[in-house]
Image 1 (tube, chains in turn green, brown):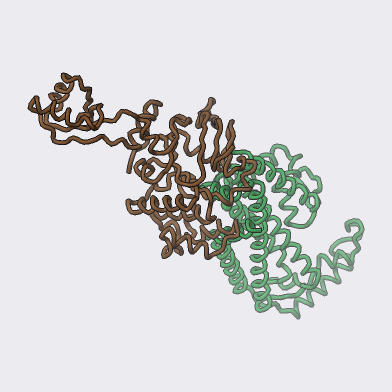
Image 2 (cartoon, rainbow over the protein chains, first blue to last red; image 1 turned 180 degrees about the vertical axis):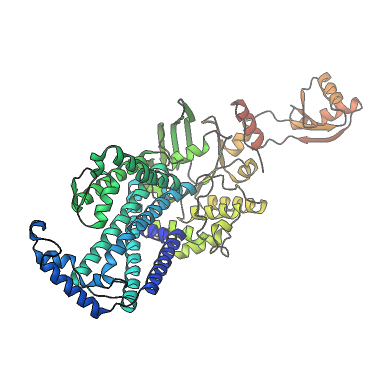
Length: 300
Length: 313
């Protein structure tokens, strides 16, 4: 418990964590403010009229014929999904679009997690405080597990908090300068799921950073390897061996964050659950390798 | 195994990237009794820091046994680490954190409260700079903060690697007095240093390491006496003539640093003076040669074929 308290104090004392959080909040606020300025409150009367017209056309089969419908989908269900009132407020901020906007921030939050994770371990090696820490707590497995858990939990909380800030700012902007149409309970559940999945993906980014920095004992090396692998190695693998694209980390991360089944380059379907398991396997293998190396290597 | 620190047959080899191995410690045996200050001396590359790293479980020995406060290292180290304070090489501190925050992070691991942190900051003379970032500290202040971190646990054993590094003369005196005080309190202070005059003034016992082996160990007085051959230092204007006059009287002497060193008992000073005066050579200085740790250290480590570290500050 004392080690957990020490690790919490250490990570939240880090200026980089605070600076990144502040930059993220400022960026979010700036983006929402620009969006709000460019938004115009919708003409709900004409939007309602256009929506009802199109829905009638849709139900009449003008948009899709019965034989073109996907299996097990009725024309009513199809029209409910594709003809939505909120889509008729074109120039307005639509709170119903919050989930796609949050998904747009996923990449930034994953990188944020990666940087925090890598620096939280890399800094210790570079400054030499890892040796000092081990002269207070020589049980390396305990240090590794506590450090990893604290960093992952902190990044998860930070990612949730930043998304909540964005959501609240966006909700306020939509209420004043846009529309909140189409935001019932199903929408709220969808947003909550998106927030949690993105926070989970950020925590995965942090675990990637922690483990790579523990293996390489350096922040820059960890970030370099992570970006090099995701941007270069996986791109090459995807291009040259498409049949393994379904197992690649970036493919599964996209499916996981999106929250809907996707397809790989080879055409095989990837369910969200499968993507989650694949990501967990990547994280688990890296954690085991990093732990084994940390436990056995000399600290010089 | 007994003693606060007990090392038997310690070997540590490092594999080189291009193949082959480097032997850092080569069969070291060491016994550090409880209480007092124990000086751990040796030239660069003698294996002092590697030995300390092995003691603290940072480096795994290639062979040998280590016991710290009766606990076998590394297996039983967690059971005694709360009674061991240490600095390995330079104190490792987060430069952007304040001195106080650096100590608090460590203190929390052992559930040590803020009052103890304040006390330690005051004890190492950083009470008024504790809330400044460590990056604004001088090297000496960082060193003092490192010593403070080692003292936080109120340890029975202190292992300090070059604690006076970077300190100004006043700081060195402070550290010397602190180490003496800690040793006098009944704690065991195991201190490696290349500032031999400091060790001579501070330590009760010393071990001298060369090429990974202990070449001399014992009480400081014993180590100094082990050099043997008391002598006199004679200064006069014409050293060559003086040397010849002594040789004629069958008294062996060597020239060193503008003086003659004569291998006779100090009680023979009168005979030396008369022998020279009979030739019309008058001494400008005649004194007993002082054997210090530096001399012993240089002789012992020179014999081992390694270049000693700078001998004094």
